[in-house]
Image (cartoon, rainbow, N blue to C red; front, top):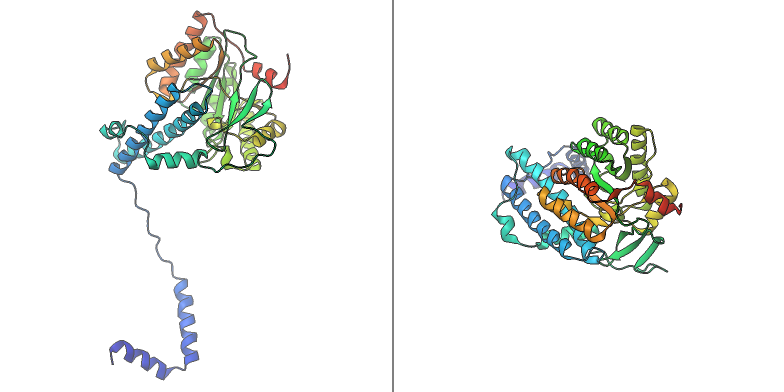
Length: 373
């Protein structure tokens, strides 16, 4: 008899079966209370992070080129623009992780140029994040275009079931421009605000609640003092993982936006009047509730500068004035968090004045949406 079986036989001879069962139960209970150290997840290494950066950068270039090539009001443009915005934020997040580990910035290697497209992994991530892989659902009584305010905006469904806010600018006269900036406040915000004030260009800054600490609220006060308006964008660009408001229920969306609205009010002493959904993605139901419950006017854009797509301020400036000249008027979308946007915006406001354009206040959109003359 082996040693193991000899021990078991000895136990059986010493204890009745029911006693052995009791002993087993007691030992199992004691073992269940022993804390087992959790296995730490492996931290990403520099090499894998750089590879991820290059993979995302390649996809960003692809969607940037696709957005520039597409017609501005087409489903292809909406998809490419939203995908590019999402990827720019992802790229900056990976860049920060690389800087933490290496102590140096990383702007891409040969790998990003070799990829030259969108990997299956990145495409799957975008589809999941922005809802492009969501199956079709029946929307009773609704068509692919859902009116919100006739002549002002509507919701168009793109890529199966993703609802985009489509803005119109028929209420603007030729030569009239509305300037808007997203995703602040940040370290560049006050400089942008001051430049717009100097150029007599009252602008609309859509802010994120995550940026509204003490320094963020101080920046909002500067914006308001400079004669600009502050609007609600979201807390974490909708969700912490970068998904749009379609990932939340209408009740969750209202709660989040209500909190950001309260933070803005406490900072500037005035309730915000405008809301822009991240990526322009929002359901008709949520948009109507935001209007009725929070009193926020929805705002899209008619001139997307795609300032996330380049770090070259000269290229951005030239493309922006080209878009403005082509359309003749419009609601311009930029971001006050990118250095290239800061530089281009400062040049743009001077160019607008020198070329006969007039920057009109955001209240023109509220009047158009509410049906006031």
